[in-house]
Image 1: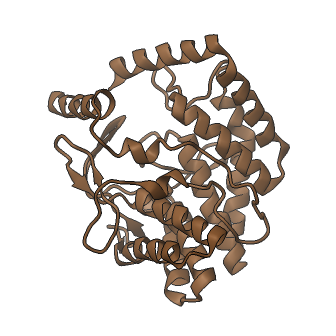
Image 2: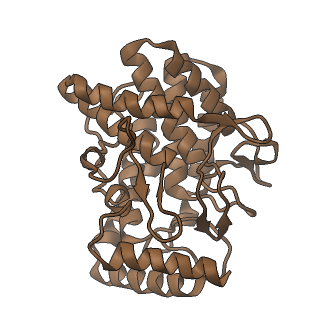
Image 3: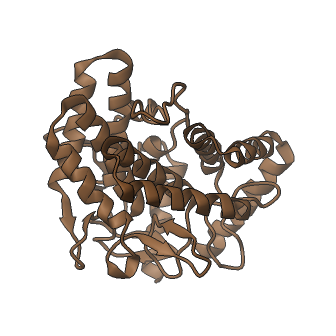
Amino acid sequence: MFRNKLNYWRRIFKVYLTKTPSYLNFWHEEPVVTSDITPEKLGKYYMTFADKTAYKGPKDKDGVILFDYHSNIGIQYNPVAIAQYGLGHINQYLKTGDAQNLKEAKIQADWLIRNLEENKKGIPVWKHNFEWHYKKLLHPGWYSALSQGSGISLFTRIYKETNEEKYLEAAKKAFRALDTDIEKGGVKFVDDEGNVWVEEYIIHPPTHILNGFLWTVWGIWDLYLVTGEKAPKSLFEACIRTLKKNLHKYNTGYWSLYDLSKQKMKMLASPFYHKLHIAQLEATYKLTGEDIFRKYQELFQKYQKNWFKQKKALIYKAIFKVIYF
């Protein structure tokens, strides 16, 4: 346990307190909602991911992006990042028609196809082959609803542009985990009230991370738009009902929560993730037309513009990090 915490703080120190380029340069982009979202037709992805396309970190010999996590983790493939980098490029392609952007997106998608593999329960997933700390140590081989949903969003758009069946087949395979309960090898959790969640991290009890849930739900909708099949539509509708019923739980009265985990101190969103929630809620409102998402988008925006609430959240978050990480 001590060694794990030491490795965590070594990595955090290098990432946050030095000028060393890191994976945070990729994740902490400016969250920008796509202006011309088309809810009933698969078009550009719902966030631009424009900053992600400018990623200057390492790549493998084929051009697939890698992350340098430093410390004991080192250089690794991250399936979520690979999918989002591809989505940034497919958006650029749809905007400009530049074939190089489509080529970059396909490079990432083809890696995802090659690395979609069955877990111990026979469910196709993208395994993260490095350890990670979230509430507890996640051992190499962990998988996530977020990677499944992000991969689907990339596959469906490339399929639409190329008509290559391998991308549609891979999207359908990736969906299986989203529609399969955790105990059966998937990433879906149904709580005692019948709420349907798709979990970014598979731990017990589930924590319902907001940003990962929203990005994943978009991927489910994308598969429905391409296939018209009942299963993704039903799962999407169930997840939207869950959000509508539970979104108030992420509101502290001065800031948004990152998740609904049960430790004594609530896990507040960092300034970046609070801003991301605002963008995601705006996009989800445009996608669904459900006014509750616009309501919370505007509420969280008011928190962000309030100097006192900003500082209160920042201090609280710093104390939380020291106690729980």
